[in-house]
Image (cartoon, rainbow over all chains, first blue to last red; front, top):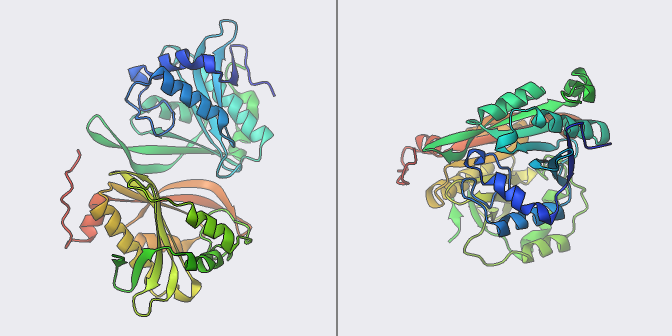
Length: 189
Length: 189
């Protein structure tokens, strides 16, 4: 399959992406939703060296994929998407990150649709899950719009602005994906 | 000093425990894993895993053998993994069938929870099980765990599709259930 729409394409990360990746990961509004390895505190700015390490780490792991989201034509790096099936290819996980300045323009929807198409039409996925913090209202609304259903709240996943927060888990089953019309459902395709 | 309870004692693993641990893992009923593992593990594999452990002042997991307080007989294994210091960990317990229904598992679980909350100062303890394992759910509920996430049809085991369950127990809930214990850990929010 082609991992692209008219507006964007998904491609592997390369070492030279580090400065652009670092620039958007360090935007304060993205803290808590960067989806980078847990060893890095969510709120603390990342050095170029650390981001180079993250790209290297992403490229070495099996049973997971981390793709750069690039605008067609311009070549701007506008975010990243990851999906992993380490535990069980029947129940993979997905997360989408769009850099601050490119949010709310439909790019996340296009990316999520591409990955759902891949997981449900090229792998044995039956349940695709995602995760976001309970304060991430935009993330929750996005999951809703994509057709994910809330599967629960893992209590006390973290601490932010002086309060505990929960992790909201959402999932979509293969019959639900089919019922919404498969990959033809996606906006912008 | 080993960790002692009313019925059982938790002690460190020793090389001579490996055959018994392998017997637990090679029995589909006791392997306590939410996807089926091949029942072909050898004592040698287990010994290598044992020998791979290194002395550390920052271990992210703890593994204990459960023995009967009365006669020292091997009864099973209990562990915590994925430690986030002063925050969270995930526990897992396996008991040989001979000791099912004796209260050994609950006693072992309570000893470990006391260690995690009173010694390690965790804010939440989690565990994973699935909808086809009501014994595990019941055991967790006896210690105060609640089902917080029900990821639909994410587990295939015993020829059946089950929900993946995340259960959690908050620090405050634990101390409320153990009024004789005093919580001196500084509160966060």
